[in-house]
Length: 620
Image 1 (cartoon, one colour):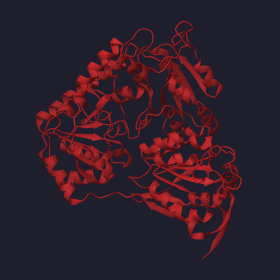
Image 2 (image 1 turned 90 degrees about the horizontal axis):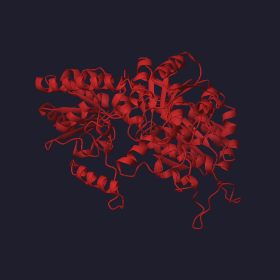
Image 3 (image 1 turned 120 degrees about the vertical axis):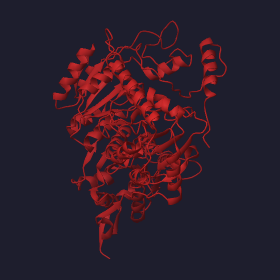
Image 4 (image 1 turned 45 degrees about the horizontal axis):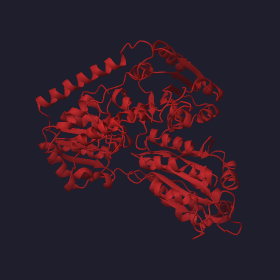
């Protein structure tokens, strides 16, 4: 057997460079490079290996958490066909990545995490940044990655890499099991040499499988769809990840079945498709929520039925409602008592179209769908053009962004009041034109993820929509965008605090406590003093971005037009009128209210909450 003597870290990089994936006959390199920050736990190992492999791109980020967010945004925009690895030092550098790991795993996005670890030989312990345990020496901070990783391993000896790496790739390329994968790398082992077999570094192509449904479950699904009078499709992220939009289009044009979208599935059909009725659930449209209420069959495609999608299990009120779930993950396919079709979304849709050539919804139901769609689009037009005097409403800001954006441009967001309004109002024109991280709804995701999305497809303009609260959590990656010459457009809504959670607090009778950016009052002792004035435009300029401020809707439109012409990251700061919010459209979200309180507003909110909970259902 031919061997090559290399350090463990050198072997790792050489292996990653030669991993490819294939789907539908198309091959591409899986790893786009490495993101990270060097410290004493990885500089001598991974750092040295990257230095001698300049063809494996290294991007310096400003925060390890945002590095993982960048990787997740890249993987999502690549439909999981490409990925980044992320490296960190031991201790705080490693644990900074845990939030990003949870986000990747919840959203089933492939990200490889390579945190440095303490010395495997132990004789110099405790080392800097080591957490010691009085009960065992076989534990460290990297064990915290176990519950948020799809696969976890610690490499105590350099030869263990040989058996660990194939498992890493198996998980990262699995349509149903992918997520964060963590290899904890002791800093001494990274630098140790071993005679690795040459076969480890040969080009290897991993097939991204398109799973076929079993005949029994598929036949039952066909029978259920054929018998349904008011069927409704709920398109989740699995439609986009499997690139099944064309198959979905063909199936629903053939059958007339309307399509509602989850946050992850938005853009499965273009907004003006006759069967597209928009967002569903707690942040759903008037059209989708009304059809969901009376649907007798719900066909979930690539969705996990998160509480926002199901409106906390109140969306589907027909007492006879049944479910068919198409999902690559058996875990999700069996939810809500569904007929489980464990299969790739594109494959299942193509086979359903072939099996149901005569299926067509009734003329009455088709007319109801068409009428509700017209009613909803009229409502969107109204919200886009409120002609609000003074500060624009948030819906008008969204409308202005949509009107300026091109047919392939991408709208990206993650947290605050923006996901709800965007889910309802954004008119997605093309697949992956709506990039929302709502599995974890992680503040701070937006800017680094936008860089990842831009790397995935440089031809698409990326518009980031975020509030001041999330901006302040992680603006530092603006520096990374300037460093790498990657342009994104950031529209920053200055809410003077946490607008979304402030609104939620008020709905719970808590008067927005602790959600505004105010100084501590000497009189009350609370954070209800003078408003804090932060110059976000100046902050963005200090980080290397071009910055603009818009006080009116006209100024915002002008700023958006100017941003399109610029060649570097641009931040546009705008204040909105908080009194002009987007309605809820017959939806609800279960957020528990204090059962006992001395505050009248809380007691009233609890009474409303208990009444609303009566609509929650078990779908068995």
